[in-house]
Image 1 (cartoon, rainbow, N blue to C red):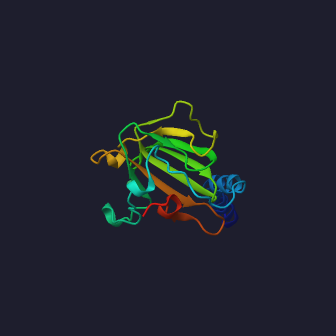
Image 2 (cartoon, rainbow, N blue to C red; image 1 turned 90 degrees about the vertical axis):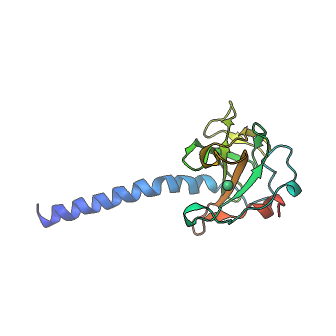
Image 3 (spheres, rainbow, N blue to C red; image 1 turned 90 degrees about the horizontal axis):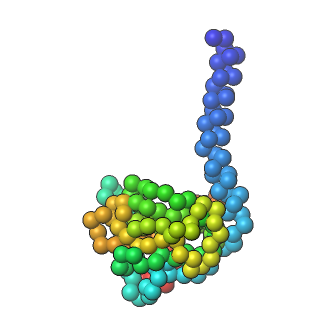
Length: 175
Ligand SMILES: [Zn+2]
């Protein structure tokens, strides 16, 4: 193969890899642009008071991980509601999170609801939600199989320059 063909091939491969990695991120960033700064959140577990919960943000976890969220304990089957207005970004099953829903909303941020026993019937990707829209039910799917049922709630800031997990506890008034 000539040197030129080699270079063209290499450039294409790099571009393709770049596009595959960047396009979903670009889509996320453009969607996120319609949402404003974070507002106080609604407690995402129906009926739970902030003083009844404890923050487990950054508690040590297996494999040297830190807990990137907080665990809100409640009876199995308790409704899980959206903490913000936004749109359903993802519905799926993760190894650690079990049955999960991700909502893109104010912050702008991705709000991650994990270990659900089940999703709400009316849920679909792209659906607009308000504060308090039911997303699913508290459960113990994923790596919560051996723990009491709880909602794992994570907040991931979305930005061109700054992204990553933020502490949901102060946003919920949990200490
Ligand atoms: Zn957790």
